Every structure is written in C-alpha cells, then in structure tokens.
Image (cartoon, rainbow, N blue to C red; front, side, top):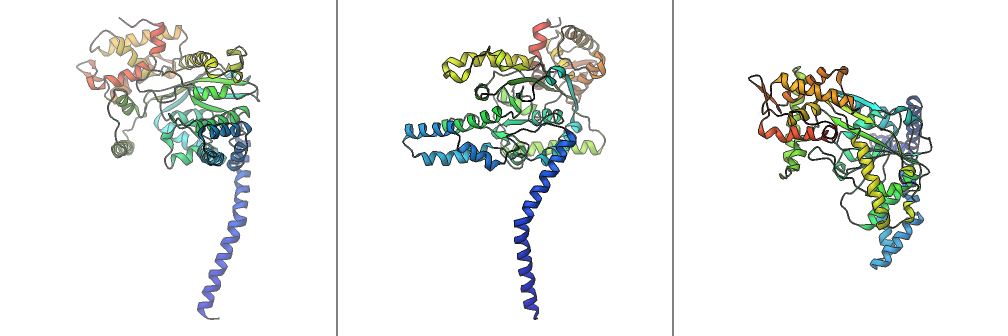
Length: 462
C-alpha cells in the first residue's frame, strides 16, 4: 500500500471515529453528567426546582402549546392584522431568550466553590439572623419566593451561596448580564432574563406564562422587589410586574420570604452614586479601564500583603409571608388590572417593609449613619465612638437587625471606622475625623441604607 493510500485510510478512520463519537459519545456524556449531577444532589441534600431541570426544548414546546398563551397570540394577531404564524415565531425567539439552561454540575460542583471563594476573598460572609423554625415549617409543596433588596450585583452570588445547601434559586436577571460569559453562566445557574422597560405586549405575555408556570410547579424564585440597584442607598419603590404574575399563577401555597442584604463595601458604589447625582454614565471602554486598574490594584496589594477584605457581607432571612393570608383570600386571577392594582400595591408595600426590616446594620453603615447625624463638623474619634456605642445599644434594645462582629459594640465601631479610613471616605487629621466634600455622597450612600431603621426608632445624636 502506497503512503498516499495509508494517509487516506487514516483520515477516513478518523472521520468515522469522529462521527461515531458525535453520535454515541454525546449521549454517553449526557447520561454520565446527569448521573454525576444527581450524585452531587444526594451528597449535598438540596432541593431541585422542577422547571429549571426540565430540558429547555421540552419546556419551550410545552409553552408554545400553552392554551392561555395561544389565546393571547390569537387576540394580538386579530388586533394588529398580522398573521398568527408571525407572532408564534416571535414567541419562539422570546422563549429562547427567557428559558434558562440549568446545569447542576456547573451550579453545585463548581459554581458553589467559585462563588464561595470570590465572596470570602472579598468579605466576611455571614447570615445575620434567620427565622429558621418558621422556614422549616413551610410545606414542601409550597411555591417559595425569596424577596430581596437590591444592594449590589453580588447579591445574586451571596444569597445563592448562603442557600446552596437548602435550595437552588431561579433568579430574574436584568439585561445588564446579557454579555458573554455572564449570560451563559446565569442561564446554567437556572436564572431567566427579563427585559426592563420593554413595552411589547407579546413579550410580556410570554414572560408572564413562563413565570406563572414556574411558580405553579414549585420552582423557588428569587426577585429584587425594587427592580434595580439603589443609586442613593435608600430602598426604592416596589415594582409590580413579576409580583403580579406570581400572585396570579394559581400556586397551591405561595410563600414569600423577605431577605435583607447589606455590605460594608458595595463594589460598584462609586458608579451608583455617580449615576444618582445625575452625572453621565461612563462609557464601556472607560468602565473597562477603571475596573481593570482596580482589579490590578487588588492583585498587587494581595501580592504585597497589603490587601484588606472589604468588611462584612450579611444577609438576614425573615418570617415567611403566605400570600393567601396577606391578601385575605382574594383571587387576583378573577380581577382586571384596575381592580387588583390597589391590592397589589398594598401587598408590595408590606413586602418591601418586611424586607427593609431585615436589612442588616453592618459596622460601616452604623458608623456612617452616626457620623452623618452627629452635630460636630469634624468630631474626634472618642466622641464618635461614644455616639456609635450609644446608638448601637439603643438599636439592640429595639431589636433592630444589628450585625455585631464578635458580639461587641467596640469591635463594630473599630471595623466600621477602619473600612472608612482605608477608603479615605473619612480622614484622620490632628485627632479629628474629617469628611472630604467629594466623599460625602459615598458616606450618605451607606448611611441611607439603614436610615429607615435608625431614623425611625432613634433620635439623631445631639
């Protein structure tokens, strides 16, 4: 056999092997990965969501055949004069965009470890307080929604990591994460994407049916009631869209769990405050440059032994709120928008109040609030310490959600002041603590994050 024929035979053999591998190897790998994933689930003991583990194509086919969605498509086609097939093509595209591609191995074998490493490298991660007994009494067939304040984009990682041994959460994620590789990662974690401020009624009909199907089947959801990140630190008014979908899903028992989140340092605080002041957003290249320099600075400080973690990242889990009891048995599915809107708004306000009552008062927030409300222009350290300790004592008496490192008021003051000094939000000049004017909005951002708690029950120190 000539060398040319040998090479042709080898090439043909490789081609046949690749075709066989493509046909049978993919099936084998899928089965292996699923067995591996189920073993991971048994080892860790968490609860899987029904919808997120359904194959994407199967879920898409079921939603395309959904009677309510098909009726809505028919109505829209009749109103607009377009062909129904054209609307169904748009529905298919929207479903491809919305439906997650949950991967158990990505989430729990690798994702949990990576999230834990990232969070613990930057913060001291803690659960402040949790209504554990009440949470354990929630029926297993209930549809559970974790309702959170939106403090940082790290909220997704923080709550998912803290609950990773209990349940997997399907988050509603905004368009900001629809960039590579974030989009693929969030989809593999079971999250679905939501277009904010997108007015196409067909899109909202598709999103509504997906959310209602997920809730009715018991998929644990995670939503940020404010709909976006706070630019000034305060809790923002609640958004009603997803909440309306969920309350009309027909779930057997819909339970909302308020979650309060806070950080001693929000990584993106400077950009949020800048936007809150009405300044133009930084361009993508400028943002990339500044982020890269910041990350390089962190790496350099770590390599030279000068890196300090950002303080505490804390989440509190409050008492469950059963929708049926809160709405006094009202069936929102039987009401039009104008009739149910007042009920929705009242329920959303109560939910937001419950979330606000769980927001942890972290060391930086406590020191920032006291500094902002004390009477001195540049107080001494001893004076500020006495006022912080007095405020913490009053807050503890009122049962506010304090996070006290090592259970100590003194330690809380030291941690909070150290972070503010390291970030040069406060400067120590001749024994006085001075707030540079250009840093005042940052100090306000952290103070206002807990002002709804401290302002309500404590007079400002004189």
